[in-house]
Length: 152
Image (tube, rainbow, N blue to C red; front, top):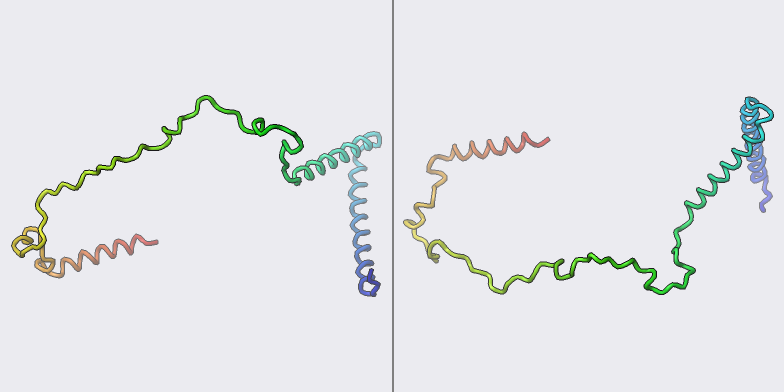
């Protein structure tokens, strides 16, 4: 144990502070006990002590790790397992059946063309600049403005 003057000073300071704390506790207890009639002091102290012991037991019990309830028992493994249920679903009903090997192909509405001519594409093609570039620009700017206004 160190015997340096600094350590001794720290011990003396600790004991003084502890004495002050105990004096405050004693004053608080004396103040509370003064309100209790002398014949009821002993049952109150006993009740407080029992309550403190119960609280400590509960705290210690809650902090202990859980243990296996069957740890010391020599039970066969069947006794430890959960009981079997009679209304079990058969395993074949739990899974979807396999898909068939045959998968129908895609039915085309017209013959597929490898190459398109300008005349073939004409009914399906719309030139974006035919109506003027301005309409496209206005539509795009409107969409961008709506998106930007919806952002918080």
